[in-house]
Image (tube, rainbow, N blue to C red; front, top):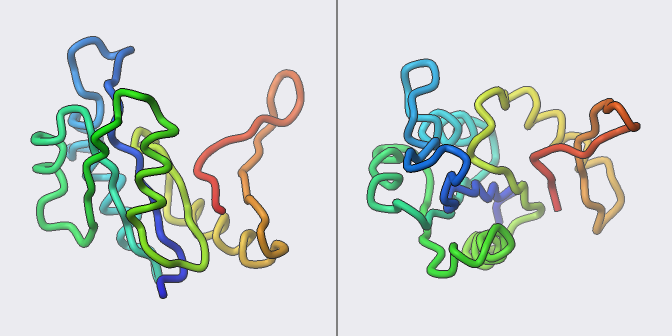
Length: 146
């Protein structure tokens, strides 16, 4: 059993970017999707499950050679929740599940490890959510762990 199965959500349309798939744009010289997947795959005791949908032929190419598993959500057009459900049902048995959007270029290994550590010390069945200060009080962030 995997300690933490990571569900990397990469199935969306990137509507705000127009016709460009933001996950294929370079960030530090590497496609954003590949950069994020590679960073997550470097974490200890995790499996990375990438949920693809829109533009899947191109996005799967960005993952070539990485130690990740990808799956294509046939219902990606129904929205984010369908990709979360698809990812969870495809990930297999794990002690916990980290769910993260793929478009988080500033997500670092230390962030993920701190979140995993916090989750391990939480009560069984807890949902661990990062918080940050906001104008109207604390705001929830990503990734989350179930």
